[in-house]
Length: 479
Image 1 (cartoon, rainbow, N blue to C red):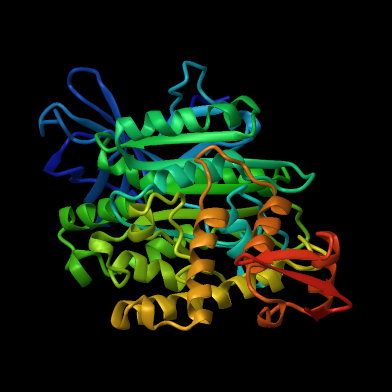
Image 2: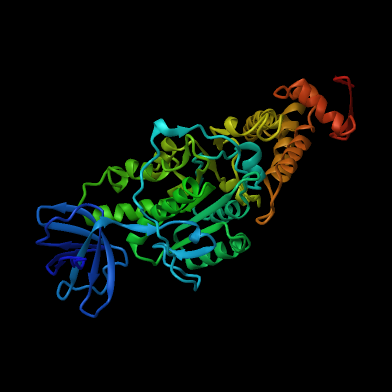
């Protein structure tokens, strides 16, 4: 057997621009190839080819270009894109953004490897998302149910507890009686936030169904770009080869987009809207469209990406673009946060467009969709009453409008608000929902069917107090 041919090493570095290395006089080098960069000191770094023009190759250096000089550098290209080992060996591990262990354990090894670039699921092969992924968070499970195979982003602003919520979802999420796993990718977070995430996920990590990738703000820029790609590659294998339902939580996707912008500027690309590259939409779609289910295969990938909106602008290029690709959004409210409500979910600003595919009869509970619709309707009426009170004063409101304001306060306090480590069952969430809607007379609960109302009031002994009075229900007649 002949010995393997050693790769050709190139020594002419023409330019160093930010995280980019421009190598000259190359031959036969292609896009996405992995390169090994050897410095004169003996240090080895790694890079990915992002552009080739004539005899020039532009290489993104994963560990950054700090300390690299143009002299004494040797670059060898592998001839293949960046690949990682895949399999269940990732479960229970904590790694950096490149997949290198941070938990003191051995490197992840496997006979199988997969390119991290991945591909969106072919639309012709997609199965419709179905069945709920329960998070233990009432605001999500009750009003904007997450469905297996869905992409449901969290829209937030700086200073809100979006990372706490993301970690809580990752710690508590579950699928009924089926193999499940969570991949948590932290993108550009601080060391303090990384420590909090680690503490919040410690219990789940001990169960052996969690993978954590931590890319901190002081890690190299290019590592930030590959972190979600590595997370999704791990998830795809766990889902479609190991037959698990996988939840991928990515926070903060805005940091990933900022890294794309910086690299694009380093390449000299003509900027588009607000300085972001023109390919921002396709880059985001290449990540987000890797979620879903495949016909004839049991696993699924569900995504909850978190993104912060600069200055709270929902029309900013990042949230605006993500909103076109995903199936709904969970919007966090600064006003609710200031009022001490956690999670500060704006119920009327949030929406899960696939909720009807995963909730309701035969999936969660018969009355789930009806109850959620009733809560939304009353919350909308409460918001109108609140706006009227701001103009005319609360004394000018009718008794019905005051009741709506009382409902909104009860919804915030009894349904939406919960502890950061409080894991509620769906049954508890729906019972809390019934408790707040039952503050109103039965005749005003127009979104609930007679069967649902009869079943509820029969279950609570036929009595429900409201506003100091009492309402007794017999054969559907209010007295």
